[in-house]
Image (cartoon, rainbow, N blue to C red; front, top):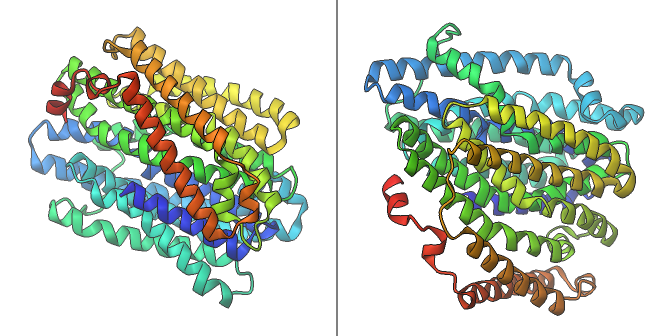
Length: 504
């Protein structure tokens, strides 16, 4: 379902690129969309679950249905009340927020005003996000992953529809995308309701900030959200600093980020979403071995897919951007410049994926302070890197700073888990990694020798799509074949697969 949602996301961005292109208006919308999109990723893509699911399992373990239902009702009511207050405050202070998000727009009157208007329209989406994250966490905790994983697809469908049918009717066409976000939020909420009703867990909203369970969630939320979103904070920083650069920089970073988010969503998000309830359950049962083995399996799968995906994005950056986005309003120069930032983001792909998983290794144990501390360290390092690399590589330097920070954060988290013996790496890691490196190198050499990036500029969009698909499939075949030749087998991926199967 995550794959379906990401594919629709690409179609959405292709439509936006084709209809609106890259200009001051799209920069304004993307800057305004950055905040609610950032909050969506925080809440819906696991950060809220890191605080809520461990407490939910605490109540489930007490086998008291009435107490569990009361906790759900009070958490839902309190969360939505707090988010409503933030929404009202945000709308009233939208001009100031936009100065903070994109200070470079402050000297571009019309661009700044459009960004503020879009932000005011989109901000109520925050309340919808809260309910979507809340209901999705409940469903995931009960082993129901289908609806929460498919819900983001609704946002993409609504924005596509707004671009096609609503934009032509508006004085400022790009503002239609902001209204599409709000329509999507309402539809996403309605999609969750039947699934909650089938579990008899549809909440009756009650506000009680003094409830013990609610206080536990609210206490864990800020550090859990921050620690799970270091990369997203860096993306906001990218937008902020890019607003001072050449016109189009914000859009180039946006399209680059969208391509990197594809493997992050399919692997990092999907793995962490599925692993978190099981890790929390394992911790509640005090099964240390099952906890460590499950984390080990997730890490091996991340390396197995993450490393070749990194090389694939590096080598196919411009062909991918050209195939997906190069139309009338998105030219060859845009492809080249967005390709530079895509390659920079690609370097941090494995760091982004590992960070999501490793944070779950802490929050599932009710430890939100450790990843919070390391997240602060990573953010300070990020500020130094951003301030330096922007002068050397412009918008690509901002992307590179974000990538390097992701690796720093992941390495700190991994080191701590190993030091505290929470995670005990299983045998065979050196030979496993060596096989992955060799197979990835063979795949990279094959693609580098076979592909001429200049070809893409001469072909039609259909020819580009056919050629890109062909080389992705051939790259996969070469990689998989090299793995088999080097001797990689299923047991190398999961040495303790019997225990993992029982754990799952």
